[in-house]
Length: 443
Image 1: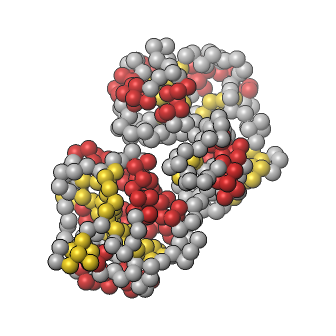
Image 2: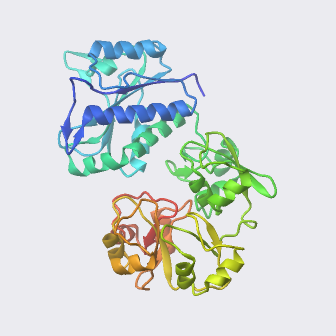
Image 3: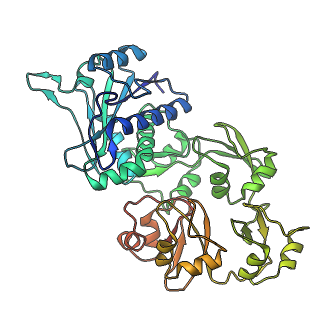
């Protein structure tokens, strides 16, 4: 990694609101984006400064002076000026200075495109009165700094506005990832874009992993690679016999780690003698091997559950559950993992994790059942749902379901079930190709 520094700008501010439309005010969203981006780079230990952290008015002259005063006038300084576009178009674009190359701008655009956002172009614009100079002052008056203006989408386009409201953090993460790749600091668990001359062996060596780990993370059946192919780089976890040593990275939670390694949150807490669910970046967590923590026949207690309802749903008895789990009381706690008798019948139920925008009606329609049946099955007294809540859904047998695993893509799932990406997207009302581990798809 070279001695790069990052300067972050939130465009507009104070008396200059920028553009507005579809309930978005540009200066406000720019500030949210900039503050989040600053926290991301700071958490990674990269030298970073931010031009404004509040809703203040800054003149063009003052703004560029703050850029140059942050780390000096140096080509190793990367300026990321964050903006939202207007004018009726759709998608993201990046403006870069005449003195700079298109390498980083195009890398940023491609990473944003990976999130599902439409990408337009990376371009330069010249001053009509003097074509040797940049048109925009953020490129023209920032010396030797690598100056980029990122337009994440068009707020006066309904589709873009909806995506901006829900996906802007994903867009920022994409920009951060692009910068990390550009400066040669790609953390584990991210992606790598295949270049001419790359091989699985050279990429595995670069990230200190094995070819087998790289192939497993990307569901590869052979060693063939394509230029511009995007590979997932698996997290580096050290196997120490009875347990795995995992180093916590930004965005991790006990739930996400437990899910990825097939154990429960309670097991992680007990195994590591944790007093809370809070984690710190670079903290090391011991993960019990799956053979010690076999959850193939377990049930995680959710809101509204009772021993009676669980026993009824899995065709067993309360006494059998209490005996199997050494329970002395029928009181249960949220997140508690219960062992189920071997060979229990799940009654044809599937588990569904509630996501943003869900309602009982939407979920019932998706699985060809009724809201009342879902409420009865889950002991719900109201129609209110929480994001991340786990619901049992009766499987009517009319549609096959698939739970997304690490390394899955819509293409690989479509190929597995002999269907197409478009059919899966239509069946599940998906607007992008992005998937989440644990997501339930109707096939």
